[in-house]
Length: 374
Image (tube, rainbow, N blue to C red):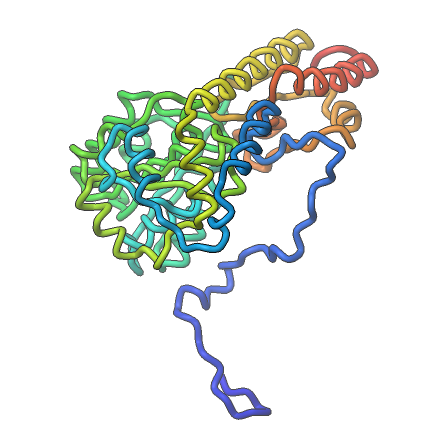
């Protein structure tokens, strides 16, 4: 395309970016969340005790960190020790999102097929489009106990499509569902047999304890993405990592920029990872908060789903309008979903029991006004 005024030729983007269906929301139009409400809408960890500890980390960071280039060797060793792998099995990334994008960049070419679940993390089909691949989704079905996807159906789909990449969060989001260890082992075997790279997204570890990291050394087609955003309460650092067989990670390191993550993120995480007990204690507090919240919701007659991430689904039934009205201005949460498998459910990020007591107070007020329960 030539500019009529200057005569200059405007550069054409690569073919996948010319796809009009590939759009990203303008971040410059995002609206900041108000400070005077509870933030339970984005699956962050805002446990007050962990927040105080994480704030103290800043006081321990050398001021020169802001002025020097990153040195990541010590963090690689510390994270590797925590994961039980060698440092050469890791690559630090800007969040688990960065790890996922690297997997696409390393393995997906134009014309490939990528399989993912639906609903799931929004970036899988986006990255498939960016790299010229065709996404193929496996739909969760609605059941009386929540969204479900049978491993037999997944295996049949993989064998039929034979994708280059299979993306599976475990737990998945927004469904909160998991595939058990036997099912995951079966999927590893199937992907290895048909030549599919199996990307397991463990962003919610250790809210769900079972991990595929111990399998990476024996399964070179398996890579695991993780994050420090959820359990560690450090989403603002944009820090995650990819775990895989050393040969595979060495290949992915070829895509590394000059510095994979920032010096401040490295410095803070070096200290945080020395205090795994703080993170584990926070996870326990949030799980205690979940247990309280679920008990209270069920006592009101509201349905809840078993979820394995740092969030909880509730169906307010006929009281939904009154509940949403009562929570307005008090808490931010996801009111509903367009997908059939979660239709009628609202999602709350986990908080402590003390935090959920405030939410429950407002919900009980709505239930009392409209007649208890569904």
